[in-house]
Amino acid sequence: MQISTITILLAAAAFIIVIWLTYKLAVLRADLKWQKNLVSLRKSIADQQRAGIKGKVSETFAPFLGGFPFKPSECKFLGDPIDYVAFEGLDERDVKGVHFVEVKQGTSKLSKHQKQIKDLIDDLKSDEVTFKEFRFED
Image 1 (spheres, one colour):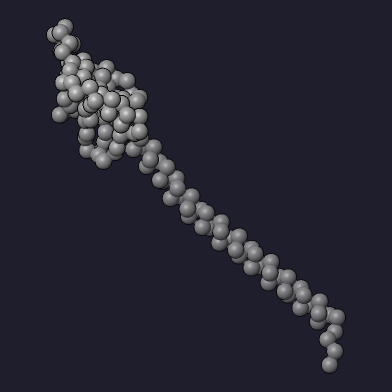
Image 2 (cartoon, helix red, strand yellow):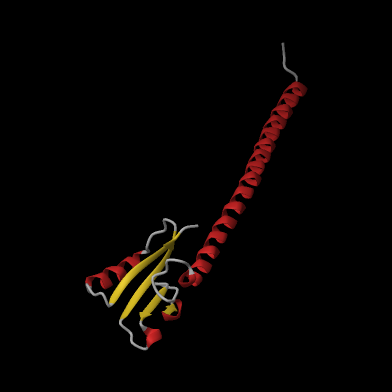
């Protein structure tokens, strides 16, 4: 029994169509997966941006929050690498201390440079020059 040329061509065409359909299906699945991931990525990015903005705003207004260790009028905002320098006694025109204050939210940690600054100040072993962390919850 001989296989005709037409049968071979039809089998080859069917094989090519199956390969092409498999490829198109894989592309469609990958695109759907990407679209699904894109939604969650956008949400994640937006959440991170909101948290960052909230942190910056909170740092700016920290001296006015309950429990802040110094008078707001004696604090000067730096922002980076340390959030505030507080001049204790500035309102009375008798500065008794200079305090570096880092504002942290929740469980956030000091950066490498902030730790270095803290260690340098702590090594002074002085009550007049200190490093303090002020923590607030979300």
